[in-house]
Amino acid sequence: MTSDLSGTPKMTMPYEWNFECEEEPMTIASKMILFRGEKVFRVGLKNHTLKPVLFFMATDLRKIGMKVESIMFGFQDSGSARMSKMKNQDIGDEGSLQLFIKNFPKKLVGNRTIVFRICIEGTDPGYSYQLCDRLAKDQLWAALIIQKHLADVEFIVKDKIFPAHKSILAARSQVFADEFEKKQLGKDGIQQIRIETRVHPSTVLNFLHFIYTGEPIGYTFADEELLKLADHYQLTTLAGLCKLALKKTDAMQMAKVSQQLNSNAEDLSSSKIM
Image (spheres, rainbow, N blue to C red):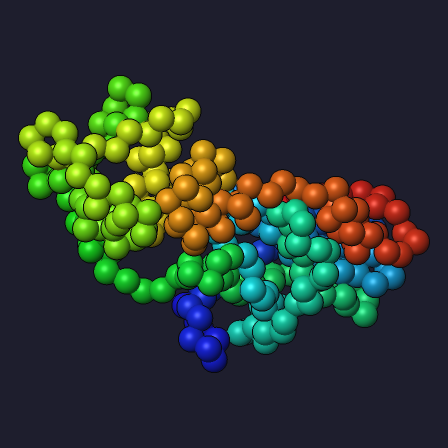
């Protein structure tokens, strides 16, 4: 993990790509690269005589609250790789794509190995990645799931009941804090909150998981109902992450990617996935 001068935590992910460059002009691409269970990265080489270009593409990374901050690469053909920075192409931020490229003066040949250092940061200033005590998050969540007898508030969603703790909810949301000032005690002196919307119980559980741990269940924030809950209870970080995650692939972005990767007169005569 690295951080910039302002102290914003970032995550660095390594990746190594091995491929063979044939004599004829060809576009070579990797298979989709998994990150946190999602297929979000792909690297490739448009290996033509005129302006060969190495490209790195990130797709739908915002679904898990992240974006690529920078890409470093180097050839590891003999010994350690000398790293250089790829250029972040301006294709707009209306969609979910990011594109980084590096132009070469001549076509690559033979068997090659390129190593990448992918620097990732959160899409919201309040959502970052850093070393932490994972046991603390697990224990807080266990307090909700296992130690139900210590709960002092219940969420009622359709036929499901989720116990929770006022102090944690109030600390995370002023809306909850204000609501707990009203004395609406249920059975056994436990306050009840009824979710009257069409929100699915699993979404409420995901909402509570973020409140307790700062993370969603299953990583993705692309949930419209989760966004509604975040807006209603004024969890601004969660709401911002959901809004970005729900952005779809934009046609204008796709057009700009195509333009960046097909800027010379040569056609894509053939392609290969490696």
